[in-house]
Amino acid sequence: MFGQPRSPRFRAALAGTLSAGLVLSIAACGGSDDSDSDTSSNASASAIDCAPYTKFGDIKGKTVSIYTGIVTPEDTPHINSYKPFETCTGATVKYEGDKSFETQILVRAKAGNPPDLAIVPQPGLLKQLVATGKAVVAPDEVSANVDKFWGKDWKAYATIDGKFYAAPLGASVKSLVWYSPKDFKDSNYEVPTTLDQLKALSDKMVADGKKPWCAGISSGDATGWPVTDWMEDFMLRTAGVDEYDKWVNHQIAFNSPEPTAALDAVGGYLKNDKYVNGGLGDVKSIATTTFQDAGLPILDGQCEMHRQASFYAANWPKGTKVSQDGDVFAFYLPGKDATTKPVLGGGEFVLSFADRPEVKAFQTYLSSDTWANTKAKLSSGWVSANKGLDPNNLTSPIDQLAAKILLDPATQFRFDGSDQMPAAVGSDAFWKQATSWITGQDTKTTVDNIEKAWPKK
Image 1 (tube, rainbow, N blue to C red):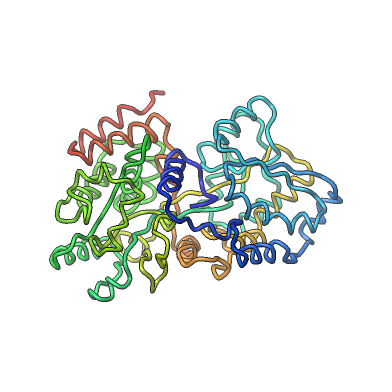
Image 2: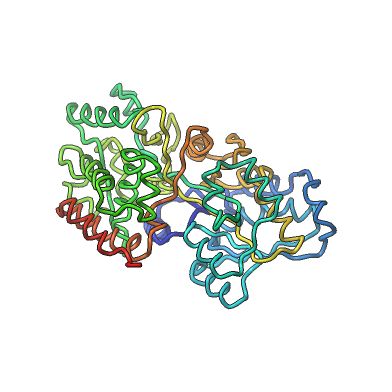
């Protein structure tokens, strides 16, 4: 979760998690634990190859500013991960974290006062910033690193009007299902590898007298967003990535057959009284259950599965072991068949507003496998789709699982759809209509109402 995109739903998720008083997986982000401090210090001081940065000349004493929505305490591992670059080059990185980043970065860019670099959490915002005319095309060294370490899908998100602007940074995985490994083992349940197997497993659990699923979509002003993630995941699986892209970009209507079928497929789970809402109530209880509380009945055996992103690891109570042989873990939400692997998630990009040598050098460092592995050693709750990342450097089993999914050559990664849609749709009508759908509104009315909210050209 931490260090990942700051979409409206993310902010609501983070605020809810913090207010719940649950234990967060951020010990390695600069807490008081001595072992974590030692790990942080050792990783940040580790020697790296300085040769890639000599081509930018003598930049000793130069300063590079970087602006982001990543704030305390999440900023500590980021700042520490810059130290090897500073040691190599003699340059200084000035870090600025701001909770109002998404609003202020546009203000600053339009006013002609942008930072040297910005960590941008969404492709849509990236396009808006490029449209200001103040962004700078990425240097050749960064482009080469992205060609080497990321898939073409990732580069395409930061390529605008044929020009490549920003290297990917961190990533998150949403296509996960949380479960109890012990309960699965005791009940002889196997982790499904296809959608049909997932459905069959759910039916078997019902036959065994269990509630297979638990869910919650309450999230303050952002209530409803977990349904949008469900729908996006199923759109990827039932219609495929190409139709998903068309849907996100409104090349097909929101109420066209493919998205309608995807929401109906979600309804086969979330609006099925036999399947939900284990330990929490009936179908309508999903609307009033916070997303933070929604998966907790797994610990009591009151439900078996909870579809939620990797950041949900932060919501388990203190003492919960999150691992393959622990109290809870997660598996990949399977594709339509075992050979396809669509993955829903989020990510960040490093966009430049300056082309000075020291800025180019730092961009090159951040786009390298060197930085990815340095960062991995410094904090939990962080992962990247950088192919040069060694998953063994990640500090938690759930991060390692996320990395394995992201780095699988078969993976077809797609950004969260509603985050890319116009705000009137993605963070308004979609959330509100999804909530109405959970409480009884039919699918056709739901998709029709969302389509009506799409801004007219």
